[in-house]
Image (tube, rainbow, N blue to C red; front, side, top):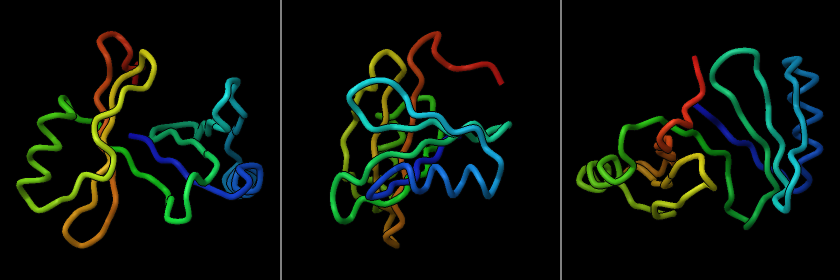
Amino acid sequence: MHFDFVGEAPEAPAEFYGALFDWKIEKQPGEMDYWTMDTGQPPIGGIMAKSHPHHMQSIYFEVDSVDEAVETAEGLGATVVVPKHEVATKGWFAVTVDPQGNGFAVWEWAEGQKPPQ
């Protein structure tokens, strides 16, 4: 449903992916250095500044419940690297790493926040 790229300077991947795929990319207001990418169809994406040396791109999967998805993932051998976290009034996410080392996030929309398809 969503993906995020990271970069030392987010302007560089914004320029690269905008030119490569003709995506509309805009810097968002606020303290966080975050850019949104409109691909013209789902999925949508974003670009943010790298927060630590191992910060990598993220893939988000929409779920009905972050808590249930994390519990199931852990039962299957995944490791939680970012526990459930709220994003303003939009929803919640958690980041996990599967048993093979692939990172991914699960996202739960807050009531009334899911955009129309």
